[in-house]
Amino acid sequence: MAATTTQTEFQKNFRLIVERIFNNWQNLRLAVEHGMGGRNGQQMAIQIMDYTYEYCVGNENITQGELQEVIEELMDQEFNTLCDDHSIPEICRNLLRYKQMALASQYPQIETELSKLPQGKDWLRPDVKITYTPIEGDSSSDEDMDDDEEDADDDMNAAESDEDAVATSSGRVTRSQTRKQQTESFVEPEEGWTTVRRK
Image 1 (cartoon, rainbow, N blue to C red):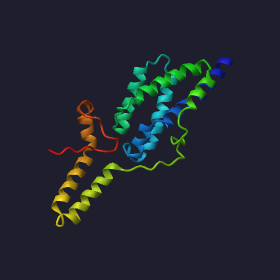
Image 2 (cartoon, rainbow, N blue to C red):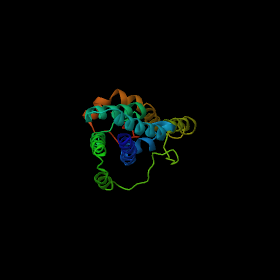
Image 3 (cartoon, rainbow, N blue to C red):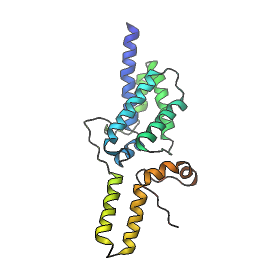
Image 4 (cartoon, helix red, strand yellow):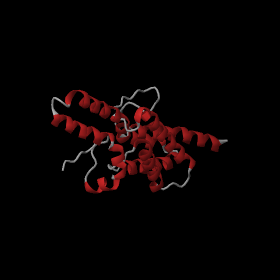
């Protein structure tokens, strides 16, 4: 009976720890706000958090590398996003460390450490609304406007806008195709932006 109570307490407390860490993960929030996950981005982010919790609780001897691979794959699949700021390894290291501490019932020490995190509002909840900027919707409306209104007025501006719009709308494809090149040759721009190189 005592073992079951301890296990329940661990799961409840570890769930809160996972929520605190994910709610403070800036890259995940930016991916949602910039529309990388589309209309259901926030819901996907909650699912990633839930899956990470289940994965940590359901597997005993997880390495940091294994957990990192899981989260990176989820971010790639759901948000078409690579995190180059080393936030994922740090999150994984902390999650696994806090899991061991929680199993040893070291909750006061965990709380002390977590209290040092910025006290932002929890946003990974269905009742909190996160506004996002749709990427592809914006570029297609710009293209339409260029075709209808600006072609006769200013050919050069329209051509530039069309070029930007095309680059933006194909940004997802480009990002996944040239992912390796991008990370090697230059620092990737902030999520939601597409770098257009002129000849």
